[in-house]
Image (cartoon, rainbow, N blue to C red; front, side, top):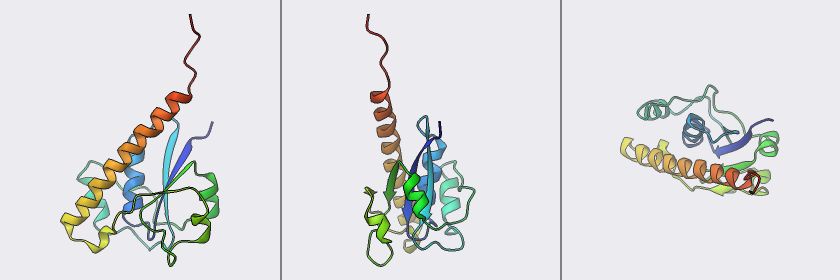
Length: 147
């Protein structure tokens, strides 16, 4: 059975969504995997994203920032945006699917202290999502035969 996918989306796929993907995939619930994409991806990750992840013992995903596609949205079990649901950067298709929006500021515009604050808030959100997905899976699992 193919793993279920959490798709993390931000505008550039250079900071928030890449960090969320790395954090989630470091300890995913059984049967889950994360991917990330951007509505207007840039050529490479923000230069501070890798070092900020390294402070947590994590590393960047093995892909460059990538464009959000309809296939990614269709294949995703859950979609989480990082505050990119504005009309200028958000494709209409993304507005038509059920998403969670974590509304985090773009850390590229912040100093290192602000970048870490966004990273740490993101880590807390990702951990909560992991717990929620694992709990939902346990609730759906057969409980065994009653005695």
